[in-house]
Figure 1: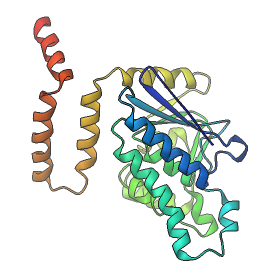
Figure 2 (figure 1 turned 180 degrees about the vertical axis):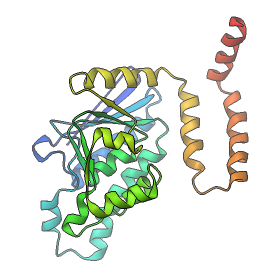
Figure 3 (figure 1 turned 45 degrees about the horizontal axis):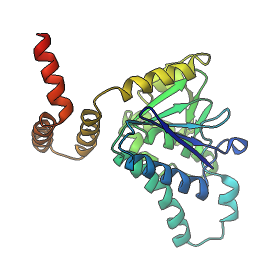
Amino acid sequence: MILYSSESGIARITLNRADKRNALHPELIAGLKDALARSARDQSVRVVLLRGAGQDFCSGADLAALDRAAEAGVMDHLATVRELADAFLAMRKHPRPVVAAVRGRALAGGCGLATACDLILASESAQFGYPEVKIGFIPAMVMAILRRSISEKRAFELITTGEIISAAQAHAVGLINRVYSDVEFDSSVEDYVTALAAKSASAVSLSKTLLYHMDGMTFDAAIEAGVHANALARMTDDAKRGIERFVKKA
């Protein structure tokens, strides 16, 4: 269900259900969580790259599996849903940047999975959307992530209309970071993650932690958190070496 490899500081996680458009089901989610945990433990990993096998990133929840579970009780549904919530949290709390490489469709829970990543790179023909409303469902957990990524009004429109948008539209509203041509997508993704992996691992990790830790803080508390992170960053080996190089150059 999940393919995993790590080389040159980049952990590669691939959703491997191409025949089902990488639809999410319990085994796939469990495998994703395991892969995220594995990459978080590996000190050599500097960037995590998440992608889907085949033509699509992820089509969302496996509706056939949901249909089979229609008679399940609320506690069963809570347990199942919490597994995906834990995956979202694992991506948020991962010590390294998690990058989604989206080719084809990223819809419903699949779009949520991409949005849960720290960065999203997309091919020009990629599509994004939350069409759950069309079957009387809602992108419930994803809302917490989506409203932090784009404006509240645009988020409201996407989740209540089920509109599918292009990569260019997703970029325009701030949902994704980069759009690359279909032909050059793979090479462009490689260049991007390689450059990111070359950055100071401690600086990137501290930046990610601080940025997300500021959620819900008052301005004063956020500044104070920045004070402590700043002092900590100055003590890292990367910062000491970087400052030394800069002084010598000057």
